Length: 59
Image (cartoon, rainbow, N blue to C red; front, top):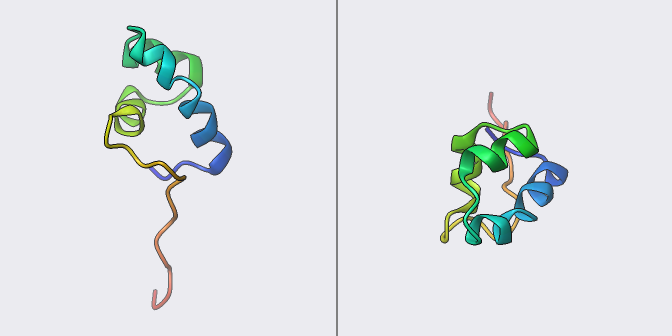
């Protein structure tokens, strides 16, 4: 799942909450995303900038 920029920014706001001990499930419920998506974007090595959709060129 590629998040749009607004969803990505909303999720990034919860990084401090996660570091304070909130679970992925709690953050997922607050953002309306799947816990796996939350985990992917809140891990330490997660992307610093919003993800970009792959090129559809040649399809």
